[in-house]
Image (cartoon, rainbow, N blue to C red):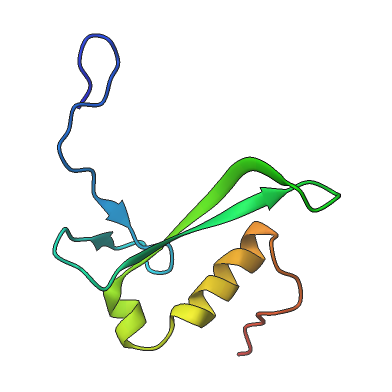
Length: 86
């Protein structure tokens, strides 16, 4: 919720899992949030980053590494790392 000045005044803003698009609850203490920095052509950090949130359920199934590789490949951070085979 925003006030008249446009400032967010909510006490809690829920996150969504980047792998499953499910809401991450406030009591999910196994969930992680990962910030991947954007770099320029020389390899220097530009000050911006991409945020990924992984729920505790994905981590409990030991699928977080595969999920992060898949999401980062779709975002253009990784190439030829994750490939879905039917």
